[in-house]
Amino acid sequence: MKRLQNVFILLASLILSATAYASPSEGKQYTLLEKPYSTEYQVDKFFSLTCMPCWQMTELLKDKEGSGELELHRTHVIFNDSTLQAAGIYYTVLAQKPVLSHELLSELFSLVQTKNPLQETDIDAFLKEHNLVKQEDMTQAQQQQWAKFMEDAVTKTEQASISSIPSFIINGRYMVKLRGHRSMEELLETIQYLKEQ
Image 1 (tube, rainbow, N blue to C red):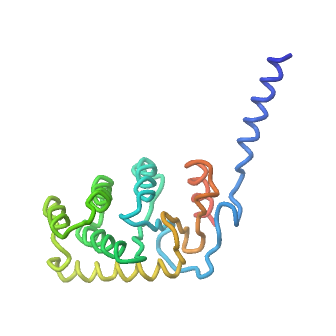
Image 2 (cartoon, rainbow, N blue to C red; image 1 turned 90 degrees about the vertical axis):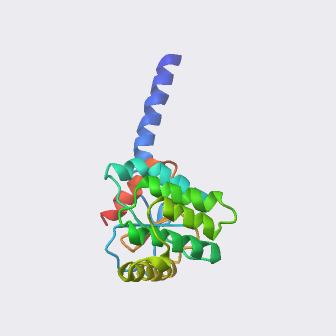
């Protein structure tokens, strides 16, 4: 009898866990932006190189991104002087290497988070190591791209009312609530669900 009861409890918990997260709901797993914005990207990830949770999230999602299952467009937020400096570095690299490898992104996080305070000599050494140049030494086209990246980052951060990072905005309309998810799989399910809305 005890064994049958244990089997029943196990089956019931499996059924409940399979149905407990049937579909995301507004207010719990996501919110609708007050001011939606137009975007060519389905998933905007707002982050900063200064943010440890952003780095951790990047590491957690790298396999999904690497397999092509998840395609993210990253927007570096600009809240204050430290995020402004980090955004400048990020977009200097991105203007020169539009396809940013996971390894290089991870090295950027490491540069910004382990060098405290971050010095110009640290930035110069990093750029030289990766055959990159400082923002002021880029080509005119790269400098224009850098300026557009920076302007877009400020505009999108304000439009989406980003106040904490990392944040995910889907289709320029929905903000995913990270605390509304118990696992990475639930988060990915919400992102997929909202992409289809």
